[in-house]
Length: 140
Image 1 (cartoon, rainbow, N blue to C red):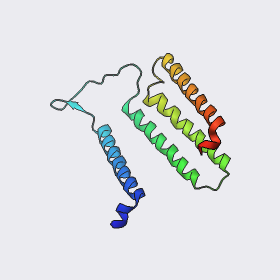
Image 2 (image 1 turned 90 degrees about the horizontal axis):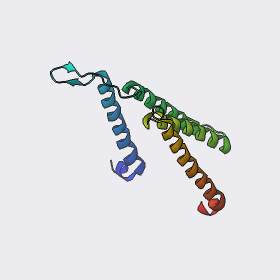
Image 3 (image 1 turned 30 degrees about the vertical axis):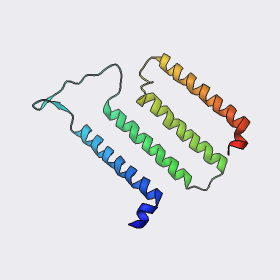
Image 4 (image 1 turned 180 degrees about the vertical axis):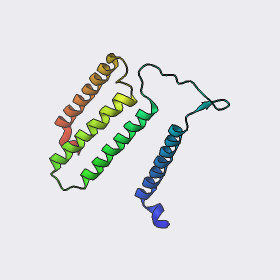
């Protein structure tokens, strides 16, 4: 037991794993037993705009988990560093796109929000690239 508390990997990994499993269990129960409003009468389903259903959010979450698993699996393959970085950047871009499209609702909202988000992201990325290009050697 002493080794458990002295190992920082164990102290962070197990609580996060347990929290994730509890969250998955709660989300699954919520989807299986829809909320009812007073006396067992179902509440009317109200949809605002073209936002997706909770089932789609769970599907997107499962896709994100699968892409993350692929990233972890790729880590264990013996491939060139440049190819490894390109694969991880591509998979991260897929996850980034899914999160921004669905969880930030950019796919369903006005295109003005998407343009504002992409412009801000491109500006931040270009500043990052310029800083790395000029100070990259001294930052490491």
